[in-house]
Length: 559
Image 1 (cartoon, rainbow, N blue to C red):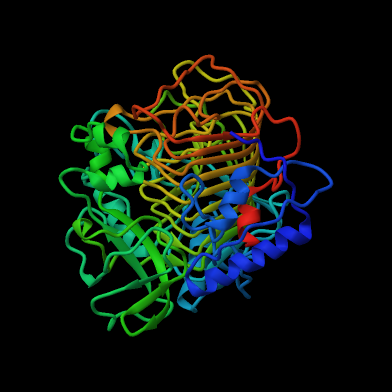
Image 2: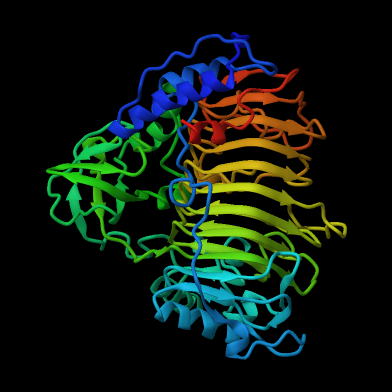
């Protein structure tokens, strides 16, 4: 395969971006062939030149240029201050439980129609969890080095034992829930009710009653990458409406094959006994309507998959999502306890966004947690300038239960401050459960790995990350393949030379690895789930020069 010796200047790249953006406005991809211009340094991969010619339909690289809050906006929203937690009884004395005061201030802001709840500098003890269930409410400290919430209790103590819906003795707090929990009020209440009744719930946009949500309209056949679709009845669709695109599978599991790139390998894979994976279907993708003209509906992002008649594509109602809310400028410091054995976490968890859309976390550090930052059926959210540190954790970051189009950028996973106890497990930046089009960008991972917990995640990007690759992936066999199609690792610096889950050409179908240090197999060695040619691309390996563009997400956002 060509190593791509052509270079692009900044002017050339921006010109290319402008031309492709014209296609985005009309909902079609502009055909652009950038000239082979000399650059001052670095190598432009052949794959990048190919991508600019077909950014929404490239077979190996997904389009993620609109991942994150407000379609990947560089600036997060600012909301006026409407409440100070001190006015509701919070005192930074290390003795007073300030969780009730903070929750009262959040509720007041929500009932006022939104705004910022400010937390001044200092350390505030919280013996309960902080809930943000109102739209357009921001909890803002004075900065992660100045404002601290000191948490003293776990989710097991505060809510109860949360078992796995798949049986056994596993604790679902190992992958769900946070001591700062952003979720719509109705969704949060139903979850807590189910947990306390030991009726373990599905945690996504349709919950346990997945077949009882109302169809707004059927959607006619369309192709992956289309921005505009034709619907049967547009009468209930308006610009700005958040709808749920639901795509069902058929008995031959051709939808799952499509998510895997199609072809002989996925066709011969035995899907029928993958009970956990099958529980994630239908695929549910929340998206805002941008424009309605007759029966033609334009979306704010291109379609993640084909829409075929046998999959009954439709827009449906869903649980009311949380939108426009965030957490900023604070450290959540959890009382230090020994890390629990694998899958028995008590729920000393950090910040979780659930059934959230266009929400964010900025300049937030969590310490001494079981699990750091979580995205659970969350979409179009941004985690920026986040950090996980302290005694070590199970999942520093987890992304699951059909989470899509999220952006995690400028993130840090610190090395643990104490040795890992026997029987514990470290994963890293996790993705699973049909989650798609998520981006991890500009990361400093001093421990962990690029974790897939199976469940066929597809079309995700990790780019411009330094990693000490010492973690292990997880995932039950009945959760199906590690990867679907269009996974991309771009400009990855592996400090310890371990290959596991870094180099994708032998693992992920129709995927790409571009700009990777030399790595070798040792410790956990993975094998592909699909037979035959994976059609996966490897370029600029091993890296001998700077990759241009160095950050795949930023380059796509500039298109």
